[in-house]
Length: 302
Ligand SMILES: Cc1cc2nc3c(=O)[nH]c(=O)nc-3n(C[C@H](O)[C@H](O)[C@H](O)COP(=O)(O)OP(=O)(O)OC[C@H]3O[C@@H](n4cnc5c(N)ncnc54)[C@H](O)[C@@H]3O)c2cc1C
Image (cartoon, rainbow, N blue to C red; front, side):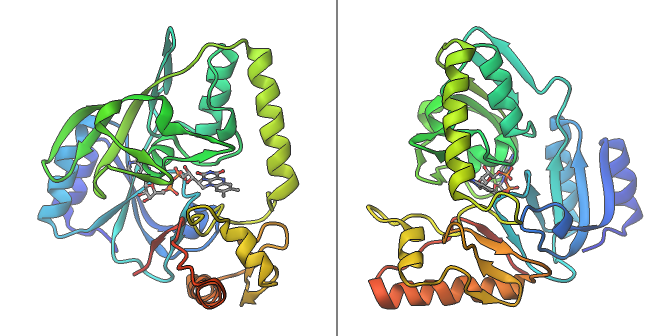
């Protein structure tokens, strides 16, 4: 979708919103798949209510992009524009055990910055790509921990009420790769409360998690992490592996040889290829195990 209304274009500049026309989502997502649309980069949180009124008024639908590491985006010209926050300087401010972090901050850098300041707890998140906002939305986690455990407060834009709001941690429910945020809530910043631990101790944990990731995941290949959520008490990857589906492919969309729940773009996979692979693997698992696998990857299909 292209924004062409001169009134909207003029207003964007006043709101300090940068317009990047005809951006390829394949270049902004870790899977390397996705068509083109206009990208709006938001430099000030305060611009958001006005920006969304402007887009709604112009009948321009939008989606919200973090780091693009958990997304499968459709092919071709996309029927919505993309909004993305630009991280301010600095994007992490510490205050005792509290870390005030902008939603656009890189998650890995946040974990290491806090660790270097003797604040731990998030060791399992090292190696999870993307932004802190995306991690909040997905309640990202690994190796027995999840980011939600440490959330004390979230500042967000509530699209339904068209206002900026602050939620305390206990007002939000964080479950396995699921949160109680409304689908159109936009996370703007978070305050994390982290346990004190000396850096050298945190580093040991980080190294262990890094090693586990390197040993089990196709890190050099284009993927979106795990495609499916693990069903209660079971492992999606193990079920797919037991069916002998490692290496199974549609076009260049392929089940990783290393981790059966990672589907990789081994060349020029399209969204159509990847969606066909997902549907096929889901049907085979359903037939063999009677389990309906739920996507962990977020699909934006036109
Ligand atoms: C190699 C690899 C390993 C991975 N390992 C893990 C893992 O161990 N554990 C795990 O949980 N995940 C893992 N992931 C998946 C992914 O990195 C996480 O889900 C990550 O938290 C997504 O963040 P993002 O900023 O990239 O979000 P995006 O992919 O950009 O977006 C994901 C969803 O969040 C929404 N969103 C993003 N930012 C915001 C915001 N500020 N406000 C509101 N909504 C927002 C988007 O609209 C979308 O619905 C892995 C991915 C890869 C490629």
